[in-house]
Length: 215
Image: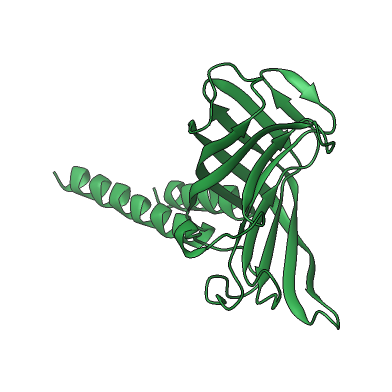
């Protein structure tokens, strides 16, 4: 029994140790009309999953002297269901800003790489993502360069065009499919939390087996 419990716990840890993921909801603010049944105000949900995160860089030299990091992922993707339309994109990255000191202080951004698929149609230069930013002076939202365990969307106070969501076929002026605002980001529990949960479940199973034997 102890072997089974230990194996279950190790499986939970190994499956979650190198993953970073979150769910998000958003509201459409612009559409080019190519997605039937989708209009301004349509609320949709999506999911981000990235495995084996690598911090590509952190911090920028003078004259910027600020903190920024970008995480690339060995595998993973972004999926969304927008008014019944299925969207998926590959090679996601996450960018973190901490005290930029310019027109953006703090920020959290998710961006997919290529390719993007909409209802089975593939766009080789398509991308999907969003930026959340704070105004100058609001430096208390992002603290540190690590991938956050929680993201409070309401703490970001977007301004101008610096907070936005996008879905595009390519980078041209006519490539935009949707624009949207992010309503919520819910980060899946960190691996340590999952491991503790696994230990708790394992302990309950072991206790139940002991009670059965005694009975």
